Image (cartoon, rainbow, N blue to C red; front, side):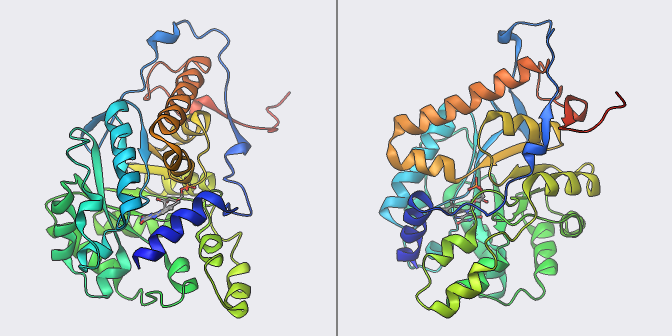
Length: 342
Ligand SMILES: Cc1cc2nc3c(=O)[nH]c(=O)nc-3n(C[C@H](O)[C@H](O)[C@H](O)COP(=O)(O)O)c2cc1C
């Protein structure tokens, strides 16, 4: 299992594992404001999520843990999140909860005392021996502020020996939400949450969803690189363009759940994408693979990648006349190519 974790890091960083289609964000643009009537310094990216202040609405999405290499990456990500006032997700803690690896590879709290930090587990593990007690231990062992449960049905069926019994999970999630003394967030891993699923999760009591749409990292492609048999590779190949693109997921989930806190992620490439997602209704925006690639290089490469991204967000806000994150509403968006009666 821990070998698999390192394989995921290597494949995600070095192979072409992008979805065969785009996020759909290219269909939308921010309406330029040629007269912003403010100074660039007036722009504030500060926001809050689950009651916590963030210096910018960016989440370093869940990626790793469980091996010495993963521990180093988690520490690097945590230091950057602390320095820049961002939120951070840890990778699935299953290997540590099952005792196969030490929990220390996930423990970054001392490096990131102020960071909004999310523990992580596969929701399907609720059917494979990890109950609410294991969830509580996952949160407590790393000093997390909330638990993220990921939904990854396609990944589980494609990988050999995956956990494919997804029966009864909604009820188990609802029970956990009602008992847990911390917020529970449910995320996808890159195929997108539909409006119907988001509505079910909201009714189950989740504190937020991360819709993790398609257009970025494709886990059927990541797992495809690990498959030994031609038969399995052929099965996986048909799913390279599976999923609800991030922009479509965001429009649908926001319409279905007008007040639910939403994290948008999946193929977010830069600060302009972040600004578009916020204007389309997201409360926080997540990035995974682009930050992994930088983090594997060096602390400096990661800092530079994050600083460039945040600079792009500030400039996008300035050039569309949004002084604050709250100012970034749907009125700032136009659909490219749409005829506006001219
Ligand atoms: C190497 C790697 C490992 C990941 N591991 C996890 C994980 O353990 N738990 C999880 O919820 N998501 C995991 N993800 C999914 C990401 O959190 C994210 O939802 C997905 O990669 C889409 O974002 P992206 O297009 O910015 O990469 C992982 C992603 C990558 C690239």
